[in-house]
Image (cartoon, rainbow over all chains, first blue to last red; front, side):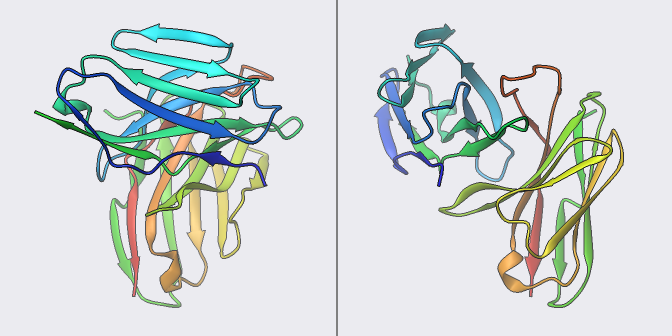
Length: 113
Length: 116
């Protein structure tokens, strides 16, 4: 069973702090990793994707990938109350010619004003 | 206008009824997906289609069927609804040109289904 694990939270951080969201995955063949944000009752929206080991930065967001440890994380700098949402980690489940995404159950982030 | 639309947005039905959820997209993407989301279980793939002639089962296809009527339309049917199919259903699309690398998926607004 290919799995993606996330701590369900809630992760509570004060406004302006760095929020660190973590995800581990079981399939060593995975090459594509995505972070989605989902507000309550809304659809998931893409925050970032990462394919290579190391860090990838986009504004206040940094994705970090370590394939050897099968670990991907998302850092949110200068957290704002509007960042309060569930963050979904999604990992490619390689299955021959038809790749699919496996989603974690998400981490609920609460940014306190 | 939204790129990925779903109808209806909310539906209440009774056990045993047949219902259809519809998804349309204007993104020109080849690949379309149906997921359900349940509290504590995350998003789970029901069916996916990589082009009009291609339909594949996901991890939880039992009790569901799909139809890819055109590149832009992908419908999900519950032949005989049961209460444990109560969930939030999402349609998603991806471009279909990136070969080996998994592409970004773009989600519709969701359909909230309640089966009594």
